[in-house]
Amino acid sequence: MSDMEPNLKDWKPAGKKPDGSRGRRGFFVALAVCLAAVGVAAWSAYDGVSQYRDTAASTIQSVQPESTPVLMPTVSEAPASSAPVSSAPASSQQASSTQKKAASAAEKPAAAAVTKMSLPVKDAAVQLAFSETPLYSKTMQDWRAHTGVDFAAEKGASVLAAADGTVSDVSVQGVMGQTVQITHAGGLITWYCGLDQKTVQKGDTVKAGDKIGTVGTVPGEAADASHLHFAVQKDGAFLDPTSYFQ
Image (cartoon, rainbow, N blue to C red; front, side, top):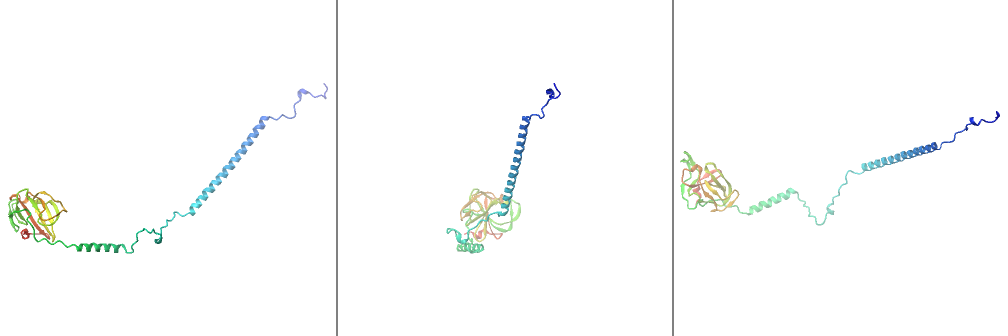
């Protein structure tokens, strides 16, 4: 072989043939970069629109009033069926109402003051009279005024209202025992003491002769024979009941 002939064993190509797999990887990398860029651009656009919407809504709310006033109809706009409004002040209307009530009450005649009474126990005799002078009490064993009249009566006998009136109290009055008080016209109060049964209660209206209870025992006069202790009071003072009996 001459020196001018090439040595085929030592020959190598001047350039390497391109690798196809490397080209494909570059393409996908470039595609991924583009998609990422598009996503970032889209997110930036959405965020800008969202911020603009929130800012606009806040601006609109700050411009709107806090509440919408309710429009009430004027007098001319009121329905025809509405009741007319009185121009008189409330105090004048109240005064007028009070005057009418007073006038109505004045028209009713006042009840005549009680000057006569019927016996609180039918056909009963006086066992012990009224006395401002102290009398000896066998039960209490002392001397004391007797501010009522004792009417002899058997236990269980009916006790009657001595006059028209209103029951003002039903209670236990110490040594006087079970007691009913009746208030009458003219400021009189009658006391029925030492009752067993009571057939009325406070607030009841009674007529003369109505049954209000039965005879029982007067604790402060228990040593005496069975009786009803009856008293008449006016302006806080006790009066002699016999002056009122017919």
